[in-house]
Amino acid sequence: MSKQSWMNGLMAVALLAAMVVFPLAAKARKGTEIPAPAIDAILAQTPGEESVVFAGGCFWGVQAVFQHVKGVISATSGYSGGESKTAEYEVVSTGQTGHAESVKVVFDPSQITYGELLHVFFSVAHDPTELNRQGPDEGSQYRSVLFYTTPDQLRITKAYIEQLDAARVFKHAIVTQVVPLKGFYPAEAHHQNYATLHPDSMYIRFNDAPKVDNLKKVFPQAYRESPNLVAVK
Image 1: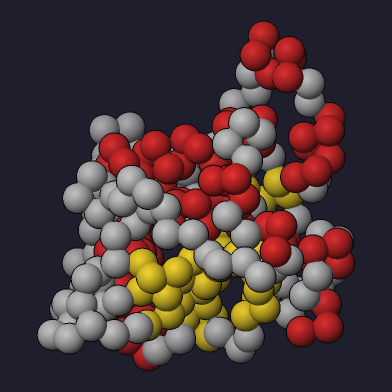
Image 2: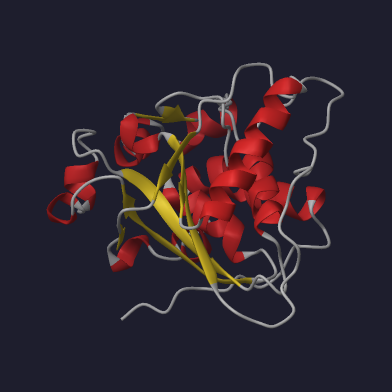
């Protein structure tokens, strides 16, 4: 099911009268907090830039979350996992391209560690136990994937997933793929900053705005009130 068909298929009155509840983010076992990574990088001594690409359902919500995280320089919606010639929304939506809706996060490692970003990704940005879907969206383009860009990112990510699985933090096993980044292709301009520009959209209100609210609640020290939006030409 695509985001567009989901929005077109549900009327506002029906949503308000009998709201359908979809998973909004990671579901830890009752009474269990999602811990920070036991293995992490240390804060860099000088400002710089590092990037990683996260995929976890609709890129609107993942982008919105990371745009509100301190230390993130930019969060850009796009496509990863397939070829450049198929990196178009309508084609990716078929689920046949190998692409996942993704968000390239560029961050300053002197302000925030990679592990802290992982903590956000696995806690509030999406549910890492859902296979080829996320909330109301179904298909391989909505799968949970982490496209790493450095050996350190791979090492820290694998250790964190092992840590969470060993502690049985989630009700189900983590299905997040961890693969090297081979290419990232920015999405069309109208998909950038979508959650900020369309706060009254029913999809945003019920699926993405709660993620940002949860970020503020769970990570108050890392939360930035004004999102760091992407410049769109």
